[in-house]
Image 1 (cartoon, rainbow, N blue to C red):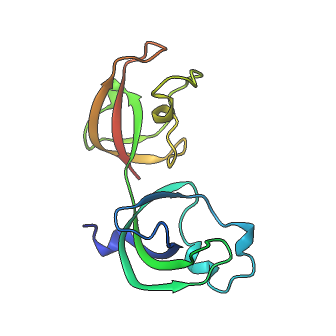
Image 2 (cartoon, one colour; image 1 turned 135 degrees about the vertical axis):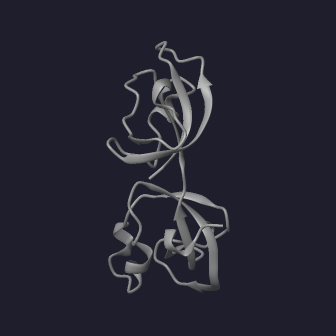
Length: 149
């Protein structure tokens, strides 16, 4: 369980309102412009990955965007799995994330080299070192890691 200091109260669509559900918040939709509660929905950082930690009271609020309405939840940022150079893959190390320069969009690891939820220059901590990437099409020495902001 995540402590209260690292959670935020927000509103998410009822389809996402399940403990453990992960999502990327993409920012405010134009459909939100006339909504009175949009400040509560749109209080997360765009382009970041979150996990629903707790559903508050189960009350459903109407929404112009979500067909089943929205619910109050507590969310936390969740680690993002990415590839980094093997020599930098040290548990607990703090790094500035830079995507691996690669144009091999059909590579099975491309999504880890350009992970959703991280931006170039993000200050991250390596939470977990996972696997070697033995099949890099560019022959780079890479490891898969979990990074937290």
